[in-house]
Each structure stands twice: as structure tokens, then as C-alpha cells.
Image 1 (cartoon, rainbow, N blue to C red):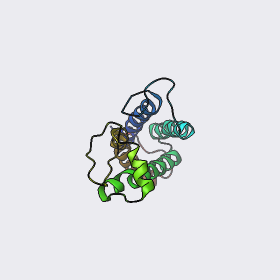
Image 2 (image 1 turned 120 degrees about the vertical axis):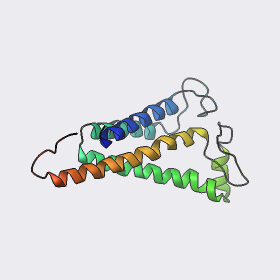
Image 3 (image 1 turned 90 degrees about the vertical axis):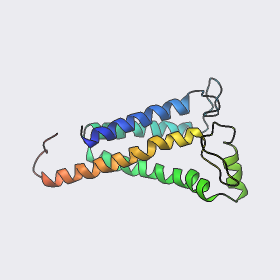
Image 4 (image 1 turned 90 degrees about the horizontal axis):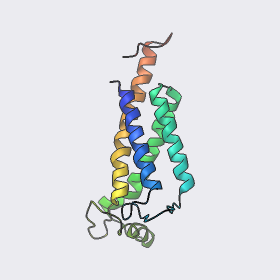
Length: 161
């Protein structure tokens, strides 16, 4: 299977998890206990879902501009999650705003321990990252591979494996 197909399937899995997680009442997993689901970032979530569908389509049909843009967007997602969740977990937080932000997730399902001022991401965000990080890696690899193949075959379409 081509690496672009792996990237496609990872994006699809990320889309499915993200959609279910953000729009379903999953109790302590996501802090929503019934219908209608309270989603204070609904506009952002609709953008993310639409972007993921566009990214998936780009990798399925080898649309290189979409592959590049999709990889960049996933890179931003990785950056923001590392900044918001993993750096505070590994290095701790001290500002009252950061403590208040992370404390609001302590009632959610946790898979990592809280140690002093080292607040772990809740399970919801940990598992988003279980999908986001490898999806980003596969998308970057598939994009680079696609661009290299295009350089080797500048006059026409390269053979598809």
C-alpha cells in the first residue's frame, strides 16, 4: 500500500474520533453528559472536520497542494497540542491562568498521573494526540514522497504503485 493511502486512512480515523468526541455525550471522557452537546468551540470544530475531509481527499487523489496545506495544518495542530498539553505536563505550570485551565480537566477521565504542578492532558486530548501525531508524520512522509516522485517524472503522471 502506498504511503499516501496510509496517510488517508490515518486522517479518516482522526476525523472519526474527533467528530465522535466533539459531538457526542461521552460523560467524563469529554465533559458532555447529554443531548444537546455543549460545544463552546463549535465553529472551530466544524472547520477542523471540514479541513480533515479535504485533507483526506487530497491524499486519496494525490492533490499535492492539498497534501502540502493539510500537512501544514496538521503541523499547527501538533504544535498547539505540544504547547498546550505536553510541555505543561513534562515541565509543570505555575501561572494562575495555566493552573485554572488545566484544573478544569481534572474531572475528565485521566490516563496519566498528575504530579505536583504537572497537569496531564485528559484522556480525550491524549487520544486525540494518539491520532494527530502519527497522522501528521504519515502526511508529511506521503507529501515528501509525492513531491520527489513528481520531480522524477516532470513531463507526465508517474506510475502509481
